[in-house]
Image (cartoon, rainbow, N blue to C red; front, side, top):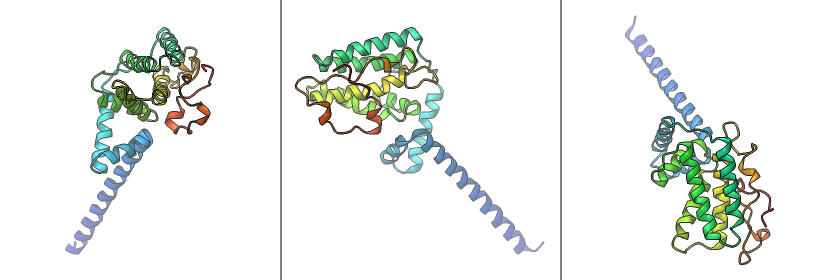
Length: 223
């Protein structure tokens, strides 16, 4: 066979391999985008390029895969839902204490389900694998909680933290196949978003929440 023909064959084979590698990379990128949604874009902005961002997300998936995350029992779901009701009903008189209770409740539910309770960033990364639509709510609420420890959060900030904590709380409380906690002991039976104290502006004056924050809102029965 002529040498030029061997060269053509080699070039074609190399092109096929390159095309296959590129197609596999596109499939991996699409799978990560579908799984993580807006968290993919956030990680892309935070990391040095697409390769580093996707490596980060795959590391989160591997770490999550090593964990045994269990659904809560019906008894635990009912107990936590009741504690949430008590916390949000106390918001009108004690907004800081109610927000601290919400923070504690989310952490206790995570611990009981099997999430490792180490530093916050690592915890949020694991949450992003199972609950990518609400993990940013978790981060924002945690930031407000941290500011509240130094008396740097307003009542409206604390109200926002409660709503954002609630969006994750509902998903964590849900059994497998019931991620929003809509089952008989689910958090959607825990009444509404926290009532505004007299010093806060009416809810009608608030800007419309984002998609993730909206997940935490329900009826206004607690007002």
